[in-house]
Length: 449
Image (tube, rainbow, N blue to C red; front, side, top):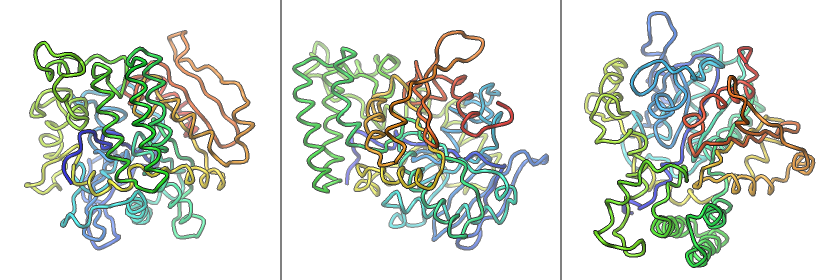
């Protein structure tokens, strides 16, 4: 399968908030510490599982893209991409573990592409195996509650991993306490997000009535294919829809519809004098996402994700094979997962709720790809017995000192919580770091909150 024009590798992270952890290479299903700082504040290593190698550092943002890279240095880790201290790091509220997951992204790799995961449940099995090994290596994991915090496609990973961990813990196979699972702008229900694009873009003037009619027809095609179980075809049709939206919306940024940072690049792709309907093919989603993650440029500068991960960070870790290049995203990983991308994970959320696990959903107001109205729609499909009461409750406004303005809203009932984050797009911790930090403190019930 060729490179897709739009990539759900742009939809990923997952974070485990726990006691500081580490990994190491060794026999199958084994992990051990390989390196760290002298004071023990940072630990890192690799875990080998069935010829797959995962790498983890002291924070677990498991993304379909690299958690060790993007989740750490661009969103919630102690240092930013310029290796300067981040005053909104989530390390203030909890210890963190980052893992490059699924294998094939970041520093993680397979020794044969046939070993790449093809389903969300396969990555859950890999990550559960990793956790079982980590519990043996790091005793604090047994006494500290474990929180999975996911973003984008990582939300689908967190749904299956959360259920896998909960089942293993209930069966006595994994000695951890699952404190909760949080889903940030997460790709839980492709159907509901796909149906949300047209009304959302109409409401913010990025599509007109003529374009919306065609977009709705394309969305219905996606729905029909999902209903028929033709998930690979649905993924292709979904890509076609996003391509149509890009052309007819003037290349709206689907990660933040108010962000014009890519407008110049998008405009440059059009032929001189062309109209929006005849412009040359815009930058594809994978390229757009890569620019967003790297901060622009070709990724070779020291202050880009690619620059630091293949430079000072690789040198510091000293456990990365010399010929292995860190990559934020990997088309082979995408292609291996293509038949699973459009499958929903609502049932897994219901299972977590039924176990009494705390489930948090948070969404940025300005996101399109995993829109808030799409998230609200899939939440309303839950079979959880507390849903009717949850939906009937008023929202509480959220503030972040010293600002007196409203930064968001939250609604909670029993073990379900929903946060609406104002002024944020797809990447809430990056767009609204203050309220995101306050939120994670509430989720983890951190004494530092």
